[in-house]
Amino acid sequence: MKFPVIKLDKVIEYLISLGVPGLILLVAISASGYAGAAAITAALSTIGFGLGMLAGLGVLGVSIMVSRAISKYGFERIYSGTVNGLIEKGETKESILSKVNKYPISKDLKLKLKVLLEDYKNPS
Image (tube, rainbow, N blue to C red; front, side):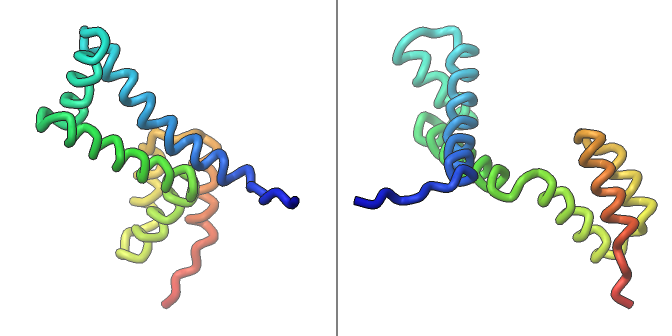
């Protein structure tokens, strides 16, 4: 019997996609001030922006998709895609560099984005 090969990056992707909504729910439960089922009900209602438990479950479902996308593509790709999009919209390298310096990201990622900006060749 042959077992299927599971790639580590996929396992991590699924763990992150389930862990983030779980953390959101735990924080909301602890902030609710209630215990037991009342805490879960209040937390889901709060997460659902006051529209009820079903809206809270919907928000958690969306957070699963968002966290999965972030873990799949990584912050680096998202930020480099943003920089490329700004370049294509006609922003100057100086204005983009100013924005990159304001981003709440690590120095290492800022350096990578600056290198991306320096290496960009204008298609014209």
